Amino acid sequence: MAGGRINQTQFALLGLLDSKPRTGYELKQLIGCSIAHFWREGWGQIYPTLKKLESEKLLTRSVVKHGHRARQVYRITRAGRARLQAWLASPVSPEVPRNELLLKLFFGGIGSGTTAGAQGNAAGTSGVERCRRQVAVYREQQERLQAGYAALEAKLRATAQGHPHLPFWLITLSYGQCRAQAMCAWCDETLKTLAEFDRAERTETRPGDGIDCK
Amino acid sequence: MAGGRINQTQFALLGLLDSKPRTGYELKQLIGCSIAHFWREGWGQIYPTLKKLESEKLLTRSVVKHGHRARQVYRITRAGRARLQAWLASPVSPEVPRNELLLKLFFGGIGSGTTAGAQGNAAGTSGVERCRRQVAVYREQQERLQAGYAALEAKLRATAQGHPHLPFWLITLSYGQCRAQAMCAWCDETLKTLAEFDRAERTETRPGDGIDCK
DNA sequence: TTTGGCATGTAATCCGTTACATGATTAG
DNA sequence: CTAATCATGTAACGGATTACATGCCAAA
Image (tube, protein in one colour):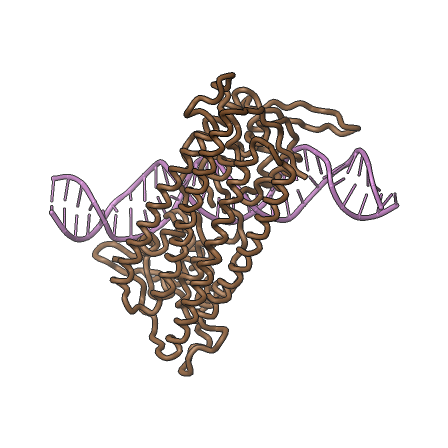
């Protein structure tokens, strides 16, 4: 997916290091509680990227003794800030993320083969029923997401009250809320469409001809 | 991207081959005009995947002479249909796609450094202004998407009128339409928020303290 | 005749996930 | 004491994009 472009991990790290120096571990934690709803990073990405950024002089590393342990604390440099600024102002690269759900729905007309017979589609095996289940699950997910956004918003408003960056954080949450809400509406509409189509399909079942474009 | 999971390309190909045998080239074309709004494939993915599917007996390949050329036509097998069915009925793997726009907005509070001074934020360099531009561009994109969806819907309704799979294709379009519409609404709301925040910010500018969780 | 579309592939590279591997510190 | 958390990394794997490379055929 969103796969082959310039490594964006570096900008997430630079951005989080802008406010204060941190260790890789702290960065991972911070990601998990601040931007997890739209951005994930794994260890295997964070540590190598930090090293790479250090080698490019965008970060400096200082080893801080903590008991017997040596913590690697990274601090952003002036060059790092410049790099970050340039990225922040640069246009968002347009991407068409793959959507597994839509692909499955697009193929909703493909019958289950094994039970396709003269007596029509058995309940539970038709493409329509398959799609209904997928959409129902998706709807639940979206509702859970909404609850999560609401909870995070409440926590943020309480914890970071008055923080100058708070409005921006809330904007990202609002994005998720709007989207999840719209997706729920779409689910309802789609479930209705599928139910109607189901009724119509039980009466006349034609073999699907090929898809073709143009 | 969506990176590390099981290769989904194979299912897109199996699904498109379900209705009729096709060549790799035809598959690429078909993808471009039917599911391009939520699914992309490149040559480098299609041809190797077709070979892999053939080696797994999920497809068979027949070489058809076309003038002097040899076209490799792939046909789905019974095992291929079974594999496709299993996937269609399996739950959608939950993913948290990275969102570059949101990351940039999340860092909206990071000032541009070079012009940060006593006289407040110069127009065009503040984080707020940066965000406004990003959101405005995004809004335009979403509007263009909406127009594209509408056009494709009209074309589909005309071209594939009466096709038994048409309702499913329209569902995927409706998804995009709902989302794009919601995103436009979010943009408007966000632009308003940013404008208000801008006014407030010009009066009192505090240095951003660090983000911290919990 | 030359351009554009048909047609098939390979190679390089990068991104990202997952699992593996290790060990110290601290709270219960 | 022991479990959870802090803390840092590496290795392997697989997926996706992009560019590269080639050549036929038909239409203008």
